[in-house]
Length: 274
Image (cartoon, rainbow, N blue to C red; front, side, top):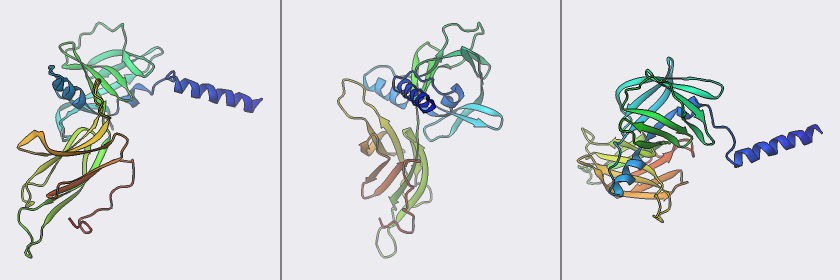
C-alpha cells in the first residue's frame, strides 16, 4: 500500500509539472540573474516601430542582501545599485526595490503584479511587473512595458592577427582566453591598445524570430569594429540548443561556449597555431 501511495503521489506531481500547474520558484530565486531587452528592442526597431530604450540589469545577492544594478552591454556597472528585499506572505509577496514596495502574486509561470496595490506612489524610471524563469518585464514611466530576457553566461577565446608579422615574416597572433559575456547581446572587447592588433568586439545573441518569420531559433556570434558598433563585420550561427559557436575569418578566430554546458576549451596561447 505504501509503495502504491508513493507511486500515485509521484504520478500526480509529474502531471502537475507537465500541465504547468506546479508552483513557480520563490520570487527571490527567479529574480537573480542578468537580464537585457536586446531582443525586444531589436525586433521592435526591425518592424519599424519605436523601440524601448535598451536596458540591462544584474540582480545578485551580496553580504548585505540582494541588489539591482544597471549595466551596459559589456557588463560594466552604471549608476547606483538599488537594494531589493522580498517579504513572504500567505497569498502574495511584497517586493521592495529601493523605497518602492509592490505586491506580487503567484501565477502558473511565475510572479506578476497583484491587482490591488498599496497607495504609496513610486517615482521611478521603471518598475518590475512580472518575473518568470525566462526573464522579467519592466513597466516604464510612460506606462509601456519591455521584456528583459534572462541571459546565460558565455566564455570565449579569440585570436586576432597582429598588424606586424614576426621577424621571420610569418603571421603573429594575439590570443585571448576566458573572455566573459552572455547570450543576450553581451559584448567583450578584444585587442587594441598596445597589443599590436586592431580592436574588435564579440557579441552573442540567442535569437527567436517572431512570427511570421520562418527562421529557426539560433545562437549567433557577431564580430564588430569599435568605430561602427551597431553594424557587424560578420557573424556565424548554430542551432539554438548548441553549446558552442565558432568563427574563422582568417584575420581573426573565436569560439564561444555556454558556461556549464560542456567542458571548457583546451586551446591556450601555447597550443594555438593560427
